[in-house]
Amino acid sequence: MATTSSDAGWAVVEFERAREEYPIRAFLASLEGRNANETAALLAQLAARGNTLREPRSAPVDRNLFELRGHQVRIFYCFLPGRMIVLLDGTIKKQNKIARDVLDRMRGYRREVERRGPRVP
Image (cartoon, rainbow, N blue to C red; front, side, top):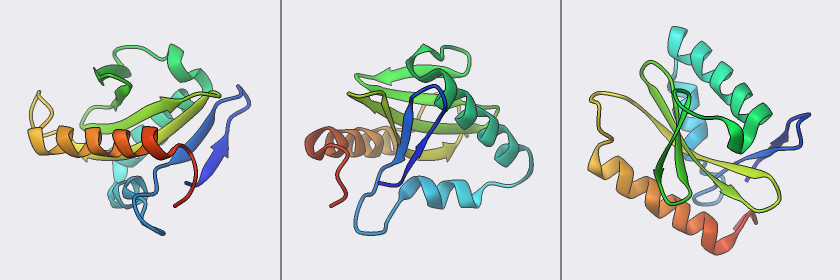
């Protein structure tokens, strides 16, 4: 997992699914214009506020699974002990509900993070 830290003491790391495979990086690289700008602002808010960030910008999805909420962008993340935020992946919202396949994938990523911790495979 790649790590960045904020001045507020929250470490923001990227989930590494397989060696050198970071789903969140691919998603962020695909964003343009308003979505890219809004996402950068959301990530800065998350790094600064951590688990105190609330709706409408952050919402719980499942046990220890949250989404950052932009106009169209959704970024999924979870927390680990030690003020660590793990960015899992993102999606462009196409409907009000999270698509079942996306939710299942995020739950799987979260389970993997919780099982192995913040170590790189």
